[in-house]
Every structure is written in structure tokens, then in C-alpha cells.
Amino acid sequence: MKTISQNVLDTLVVGIYEDVQMLVMMMMDYEEEIDMVTKAEIITAHEDLKEVILFCQSHSQGMNVLLMEEVMIGINQKVAELFGEKTTAEKSNTIYGEKLLLPEGISVRKELNDSGFYYIFHHETLGEIGQIIFPKENEHTPYFDVHIFENIPKDSASAKILKNIGDMLQKEILRIR
Image (tube, rainbow, N blue to C red; front, side, top):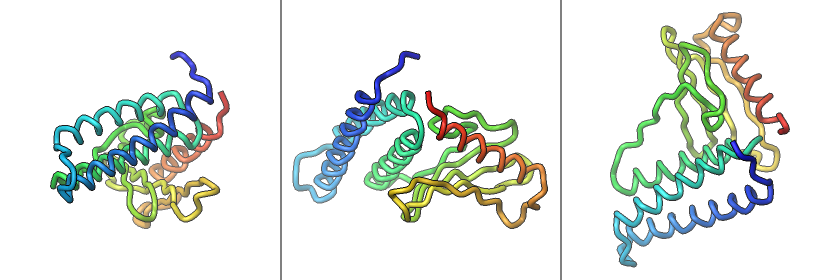
């Protein structure tokens, strides 16, 4: 993979946030029937934005990868809500912008709400085992918490797997290329 300078990535991130604002304005106009914005135009703008976000995310590092993932989930939710579609959180076997593969038997669902961005982990036999939370309460110091659900014993294999995933994520976020 060809590397891209930080300056190019920073410029791309600014453009992404401008495009997100433009998409939100298009959706507001569509809802209020103020402007002649069509559903097809919103879908096209959404698809184009997703493509740029995925490109930026694939070349980013640190918390920027997670910020792009959060933006992606947020716009997907907003577009689905606008068109009356139910948003279903797909399960995946990767986190951190599809850069980190989860252990076999573990999948993740990614969610975004008013309090933060979440990775919710599912074990194939035990069900939901825990989550990694990226709270919105402290925008100046990005951090995350690993939370093992109460029904999972703290010394169980699932708890250890979740702790290892948290450690792996922390190393990747802090890794300098």
C-alpha cells in the first residue's frame, strides 16, 4: 500500500467533514421539501462519501481510524432514518477500520449513540461478552474503556480474549509508522 503524507490525510479529513455537512444539509432540504433534492442525489452523495471515508481510513493511523469509523456509522444511520429504513448493526470479524482481525469465534457489532461509539463483542457460544466504549464526554483526550459484561467471569477465557483485544487495539492506536 502506498503511503500518503499526513498533510494530504489532514486535508482529506477536512474535506470529509465538509462533505458530511453538505450531506446533512441535503437531507434536511429533502425532509423539509425546501430544495429540489432527490433521493437519488442523497444516495449518490452518501455512496461517494463512504468511498472517500474508507480510503482515508485505510491510510490513517491512531484515533483518526476510529473517528472515520464513527463518522461512517453516523452517516449510515442518518441516511437510513431519512428513508425510513431500519439500521441493522452488521456483525464483523474486524475492528479499527477493518485493520485488526478478531480471534476465531468472536464477532463485533459497531454502534453509535449520543453517549459514544461502541464495539460490542459476541462469542459464538457465550453470546455478548463485553464492549469497548469510546465515550463522547471528553473530546480533548480520546480514550476507550474495555467493559466485560457481568455474566462473564473475570478470569474466563472470554474475558481474557476481550482484554487481549483491548490491548491489541491500544497498541495499534499508539503505533507510529
